[in-house]
Length: 334
Ligand SMILES: Nc1nc2c(ncn2[C@@H]2O[C@H](COP(=O)(O)OP(=O)(O)OP(=O)(O)O)[C@@H](O)[C@H]2O)c(=O)[nH]1
Image: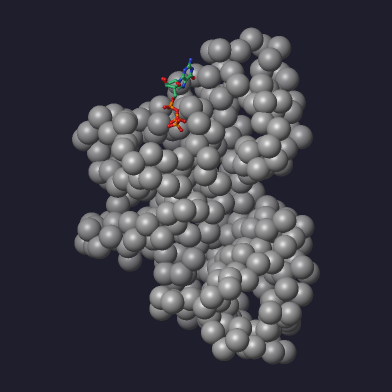
């Protein structure tokens, strides 16, 4: 089945995510694009329900899909696939809460089994130009500052919204601050009320590659072809230059904690996040693990629900072939 092109819209509270989403949906309607939206709200009631009355909406309330209700996200993705089996959706838009880390959502979509049904096209992050500079000073709490940074750094497209509320000088200051955080491949657009060129916005800018440890002949061999989304030469430039890349390794053999740690630490700097389930030799069980800020965390308890071991890595400008090679040499010895 064709994968569903999926877009993640992130950005701090009030930055204009819903406003942008409405513009996108208007465009989809005009082009007969069959879209669904997944709205996530921190509160137990969606106060913006009325804005999406005619739309195919899935609501996830009372928590953040990137963390506290991540399992609900998985359940919703599963039921969404069950509802549209014959005539799949043309696009799925996921609007995270204002405090969501978009990379955590990418990780879910890149994990098994979802990676075979959803294809992350881009991570769009909204910035409220009228409060961006102020927020840099206000939020002295490191976790909030990190969150703001992750929302921007984890994006393939950044939209500097609410430019109607700032003057040229302020805008220049924001742009120069952003260049310090963003890499050159991140697309930066400016807008008022989320009015941007939607065709340009919906271009594919993110890459997910699926490889199987069992088929190390490469992801382009016959067996793996159906899941292969590698950087083929015939891809358009914007795909080759996509800054965020996701690598999903499936059929992972059992390893020791030490081996996993050693391998994760050996990864290139561009790797921003890692996550997955790994069968630990010493504990004879499938354990969840996390990797961020150069630190590995392994869950205290084995996974209760049936799932396959897999490793999801997300990074910027990463050379997937190099990672695959390092992975093969590390774990083939195990
Ligand atoms: N002046 C101005 N107001 C805007 C702009 N974009 C959005 N707004 C307004 O800002 C408010 C918040 O916009 P939303 O689109 O709801 O923002 P959001 O990011 O979805 O907000 P959360 O649900 O809190 O995460 C609304 O009142 C919008 O009408 C803009 O470019 N300029």
